[in-house]
Image 1 (cartoon, rainbow, N blue to C red):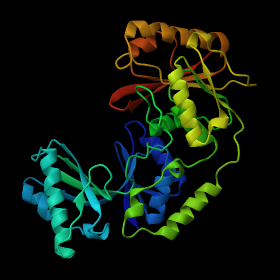
Image 2 (cartoon, rainbow, N blue to C red):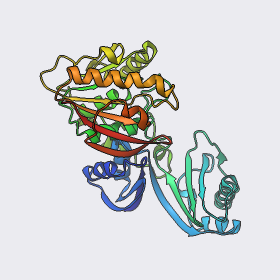
Image 3 (cartoon, helix red, strand yellow):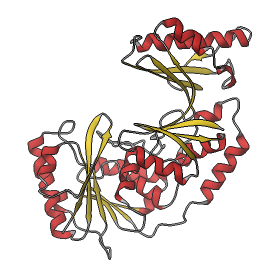
Image 4 (cartoon, rainbow, N blue to C red):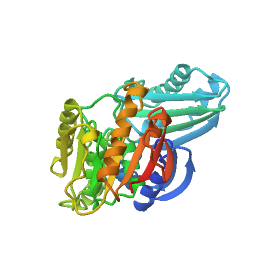
Amino acid sequence: MAKFLALTSFGLRDILEEEIKELGLKIVDREATGIFFESNWEGAYRANLCLRTATKILLPVLDFPAYKPEDLYHNIQKHDFTKYIRPEQTLSIDAHVRESALQDQRFVAMKIKDAIVDQFRDKCDGVRPDVNRETPDLDVVVRLSRNTVSVAINTTGPTLSMRGYRKSSVEAPMREHLAAGLLRMTGWDGTTPLMDPMCGSGTFLIEAALIGLNIAPGTLRKKFAFQGFKGFQKEAWEKVLEDVMEKEYPSMPTKLYGLDINSTALAAAKANADRAGVDDYIEFKRGPVVTLEPPPVDRPGIVIVNPPYGERLGITEELKDVYRDLAHSLKVGFKGWKLFLLSGNQELTGALKLKAERRHRVYNGNLDCRFLEYHIR
């Protein structure tokens, strides 16, 4: 059994922990934006395939103190990196440095790269991997904080947020893992009505459809990094993949509804939903929030929205009317519904004139946000 680290964004750790438990994996530790779990490689394959709120699954391999460049070089030699890839494959060093004697990230990355490359030269008759920063076969993640170095192997490759369906996008899109995490925070179970009145490129609705149909997000990807490792267990992977796909639901008991004033955004949303294979379950409509009406359903549901914050997409004063219009439409037509809103601007949120029942602190990219719950009465 090995120890793996599932990473996520700030504010989603507890949701990620719930997901890992549901997969039957043993949790052994936690950090601010990640959960350590113990598993064999089959469990790591399943985590990469199924976790909706994770961004990467790492395999930690080394921890050591480092104050001088030679500390980096010599300690890296304690782990055999040649067991992951062949010398003709490629590698990359992803270094992050904070509050340490060695402060230059590029220098840290170069020193560790040199140590790993020399290891290959010594063990592989002088042949060594080339560096490929874009699509490496082996991505070595290095975190140097307060003179302690943590080295891990990225088993995922590009972030798990990159499901593969979002080729068409709009300005300031929400990352897929965050959308999935916020949906989970609402308690939405796939059976109640769900609407996004500012749906943009459709991320909330597409992620909801994947949840409602029990489609593992990783099944939309073409490749994971672990598939290129020397020790890749193809039969175990195929078994996990088959098991996960057999558990998909043939249909969903409710439709999802999206509204946006921007025709370009709606076109992107429709194209993305089509690529995800969930377009039959989402009804898109063009219009401003002032015309928002409840869908033809027989019970109250959930409105979830990531409105513009002003900092990136417009001017705060101009956006206040949009927030007021949203609140007015909800008060008039959505009695008994719940509103969940991701707020990156407290002044704009105040324009709703609604009282939040609950609030969660999360990060949308680098923005410190609040995910607010309102009950429409």
